[in-house]
Image (cartoon, rainbow, N blue to C red; front, side, top):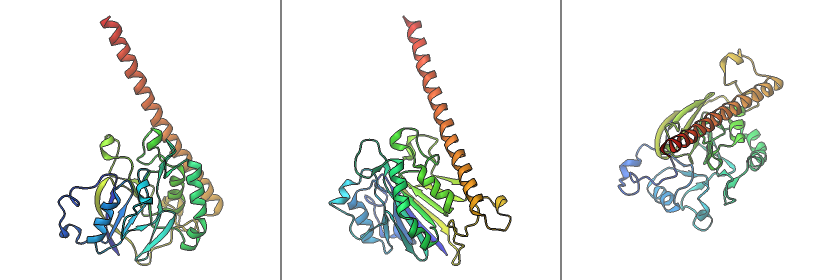
Length: 271
C-alpha cells in the first residue's frame, strides 16, 4: 500500500492558503502537521481535504489551548492508526525559556516511558511525528533547536519507516536537509510543505523491540537479535550519535573562535 502524504510545519504555505485550489489536494492520502502553524490554517486544510489532518504541538502553539484546529486530530502522546499504519506523535521542543510545549530531555523520556504499554500492544510504530528533530539527526547546536536523545533512542529501538519533524527551518543553513537517512528510517523535515510517497506493506513485519528485524542487515543473519545484543547495539548507536554531535559542536566552536581571533587581528592592524 502506497500513501501520498502532505507534511507541513513552521510556516503557512502561500501555495495552499493564499493561492488555494481544490485540485492541489487531489491525490493526498494524509496530511500531517509537525507544529508551529496557525490553527486557522489547519482548520482551512481540514475543510477542503477529504483525508485526516493530524498534528502535534510546536513550541509556539500555546494558542491551540484556546483555539484548537477544527476538524483535525491531535496525536500528541498517542498512537493513531490510519489504514493499518501506526503513527506516533510527540510534539514540543527542547526547553529554552520555560514556555508551553517545551521539555527537557528527562521530561521527553518520561513522556516516552508512559507510552511503553501502548507501544508494546501495537508492536511498535511505522511513523514518528514530532516538532523537534532527534539528537544528532538534522538538529541544531543551540539549545532551542537541539534534538531530543529520547527520539533518537525510539528510532534505534523501533526502526520506523518514517520520522517527520519541523522546528529547524530549511533556510537556517546549508547543513539542514529536507531528507536524509538514519539507519533504516527515512527522515523528513516538513518545513512549510512537502509532498512525498511511502510504501507500506499490507502484511508489514512489526519492527518493535519484540521480534524486530535489525536495522543493519549485516547484524541480522536471518535470526532474531537477543535482548543482550539489542542492548549492546542500542548503546553503541547512542554513543556514535552523541560523539557525532560533540564533534560537530567542537568544529563549530573552533570556527567561531577563529573568526573572533581574525577580527581581533584585523582591528589591531587597523589601529
